[in-house]
Length: 498
Image 1 (cartoon, rainbow, N blue to C red):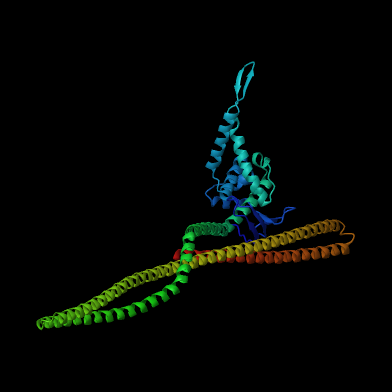
Image 2 (cartoon, rainbow, N blue to C red; image 1 turned 180 degrees about the horizontal axis):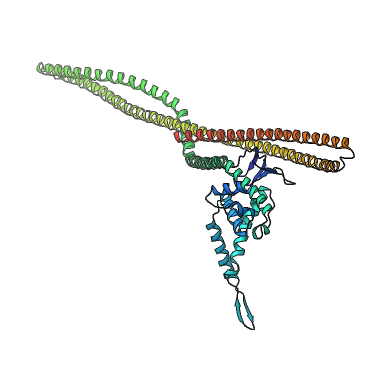
């Protein structure tokens, strides 16, 4: 069985296909001999045929150790098909369907008929079936091999060699296992990213709706503005006229009270005059009863009574004229009172309309302030996101430089070790002549091996620091996404409540 542990630093682009682009640095510990490919930035284990057979058998595919020791095109085809299905989720049926579509396209586009002296020769699909399938297989394998950092040629499919086949399969298995260990986190990140985009689109939609409602409210306000201006002018006119009307009303009320008193006095006077007329009539009757035969006295009494009666009639006529004038003035005061009451009602209506307009204007200002605040929050979040992206790019660049420097140091150390091994081999050949020189070479080899161990420890320390930095930036990115989500959710709840 295979025992594997990973030390990984990964950069994933979730916008790519299911075989997300992976830049990785791994240190793999497995049962077997490690394989360091020149020019690579990680190492993996060359598995034994027994390990490969057991691992593939766990996926219900039977490949014997003998078939791996002496591979054939059919054997490697089965193994590579399983690896492609595990890494890219492309089954054998999918590859077969792709081959059929390519054959159909080839048949439609190319129809070769060779006219020879012996008849017609037609090139049919049978000539293309196998080569198309191998090309499809090779297409997927080259991309996997590039990521796994193993060398793969078309000859490895048609004429596989045991040593190269074991090495290629070991590298691809290491890649598949790495993908299987990282896919849960990638899936979570992809789900979180999709949810963040959905929340962002929903917030954009809600913002567009709010801006639409705000525009409608502004248009309605603009359409009502002339009427509001007219009402405001009318309010000013009424306010300017109201003090004069109130003073006029007060004066008219005072005049009305005085006229009522005067009318009451006139009525009382008329009553007294009527009583005087009645008394005079009674006196006249009494005088008639006591009438004497003296014509001159009689005429004198008649003249006096007539003059008195005429005076009384003139006085009554004068009082009636005054009464009519008083009634006219009272009617005018009643109309003035009615006008003042109407002006008061209009003033109340204007005050109510002004209060409603003030409330609407206040609500509009609150909406504008809320919209401006949301725009400012959105700009701040965008600035923070750009800042985090620049920090992540800087850290990635720094990590890449550290990898490059470490790789150059490792290559230099390997070259030195190789030179020392060659010197050591030469020293072994000359051991009979100079044993002290052989001991010196052994000591130098031990020192180089100690240096290599120290270099590996230093590389692991740098790798762990890079992993810590990557985790820190990932946590800060998740914190930024959560913060943005919470703020957008709070804003959405406030709008729904309003």
